[in-house]
Picture 1 (tube, one colour):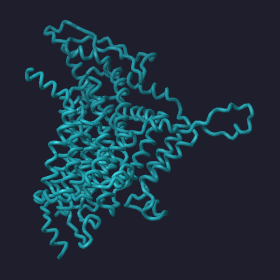
Picture 2 (cartoon, helix red, strand yellow):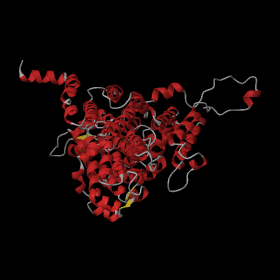
Picture 3 (cartoon, one colour):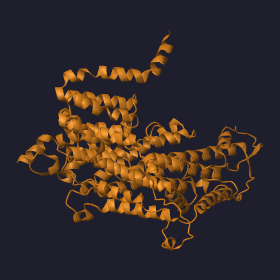
Picture 4 (tube, helix red, strand yellow):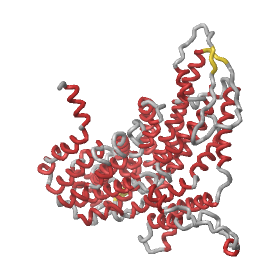
Length: 606
């Protein structure tokens, strides 16, 4: 057997080899690291390897703590199992159920088409409209569902602007005719789409302008760039939008769970306070990301608006007609849609106003510490299971001839059950179990003791480095798995450096969602790449700059409004031992000086 054949066989059996070899190769940790810490580190690294390589399904790896922590004497099974469905999971579950109700009655589609009607059909503005719509929907729906819904809409609009994609690709291959004699027809009629049907529509444009082959090729290449910009902006905007709410993406909920586990007295992060911090960050990142994507893929180029104005105006009019007609097909808002919209707004308002920190929330009417975001979410979504989808009428009770139609609630349990991603719930539980084990075994403290050389790095620089590292790591691993692995270590690092733990943990959580460079980084990226119209180099080129922009935006947020929202210039009571006193670090000191543990300990004791 030659070497090439042997390597192919190894590659085919890579998952089985990883499953067998990883536990064996990590065994020395148990003997060379302090006993309990070494056992916990063994399990953590084993899960990290399985998560990063997907040798086992992610959800199956997340259940390993139930087997390994009790049998290795790290945590009793009772303590491990209860981590898999804590109140954070109920908040996530209520968000998923609300999203399934929105999808059930098509409210998300009405919102999407309405936004596109408002922003207009110029390519740069359409890219902006796609990004605004995708980011808003992904605040409440899953990033994957948002991307899957928006891509067909984008493709139908693009076909109305530029014609059939396959014909457009052929035109890109047309060789230049030096004499300029050969002429071809530039624009083709769009093909039918299942989601946005273009058949039986009035043909608002009949373009028969003849151009040289060189002009055709240049124009087709430009249109292909715009097409790629449309496809790539949707998954990116979905990932950005998910960071704005606690329920928008799993890493945000893991942050809350980690804080409850490591710092039980910390109550700074809830739905309202996170939204106040993360929503402006999302808007800033969304805007600079739009500028970059529109610039890179031609959406901001004025030749779309100036050259061949008549042709462009006709194509844009056709695209506008498609959006208008599909919006009209939705008809007037039905009772069920209006009801879902009402409960959706009520859901957001109640979560936001429970305890927003800057003003007194409605939670003061209840016993302190008893009502959480999970309680709010479950109350609202429970109503969906019995609230009628048809407008109730008193006349039905008195009209003997009225039809006895079956009662249909806004949401059935069958539909909700189909939409619940149990794999993500298990991932959340596995992360919380891992965090609990790191705390109880002393592994977090042991790792923190080996990170003291980082005390020489100014905290403001550390924020950038942490965000950059997490954003790069999550390109190759699940964002949920990434934040599960690193958040306990980052929390212990902050304690060692006597820096407010939120100053490191919040940017790490946000950066975990900034995976833009590879198709495998996130499911939204994979969906867009699966369309077959994007190349890996397109995503790498665009995503690299998007990562840098995201890191800079997070650093800006943490050192401006985040600094004052979460009192990041103060080492908090909830993060220090009971026998020490509070220490205040001046903002300019936090941002410009090296904060070593020795200096801060002197301030605390003196």
